[in-house]
Length: 340
Image (tube, rainbow, N blue to C red):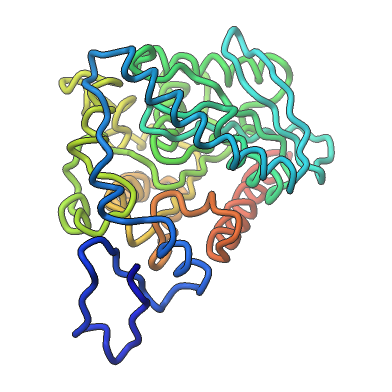
């Protein structure tokens, strides 16, 4: 695999066809992770099914669930959270309580990534448990229906029903934060927009990791970073997932691509984190700009040399730092929301 380049050789060096550039400006642990995890041949070989084939999508989902099981088991053994299944107005969810949790009414609602077509609350419990531990907060991970079985109207409805069930059970909406990564990040924004549009109010805060805030590949970084994106290729992976989730005619609907939402009507304080190695970088920049121009308290936190949803990695220093920043943001706004 490619070796990190020192400052003197960076401009002249080339990498093998299978390698991604590894900068020396990131931690040794992050460099090692890039070397050991990503290769162009692996990325380019992945292809997802045609959007009309539910059986093929189910096979992809089951394969991803099996692949992620060891990560979740390791996280549970390391972090020792308390995990319980629950139902929120018929929407299944997992409640994750960290060892450090002290009973308060703040809740972090997690919407997992997976391009709307893969993963579940159980196969992303490693991510939820890590953030619960960093923030000392109770996390409720929503097990929304993945596409093509669940399409955007149904999925956003499930998110809103789950959130309002928490409210009905006694948690004020301003003490609830929505958090999502990748597709889950876009879904968090879409859910908050829908809650506001339906007159239910806005959550206390939004935390977004690498949000897929425009489901179409129209941002600048989709082109400029396409060759160096280590995780996915749009045409053979994300485009097919997008079609499974929403008809192309709906791709600019704010509940599908929330970068097109009207945030001037009020919205929650938002932290957006992204890395310079991901094609979703423009998604983060464009969403931040839309929020900022509307006067919403928003922060864009871009990390040098980091990849898509790098925050989920347990042994990368930048990931731990990003989780701590996320936790401080959540506590600032949720604790502030409880002031009289």
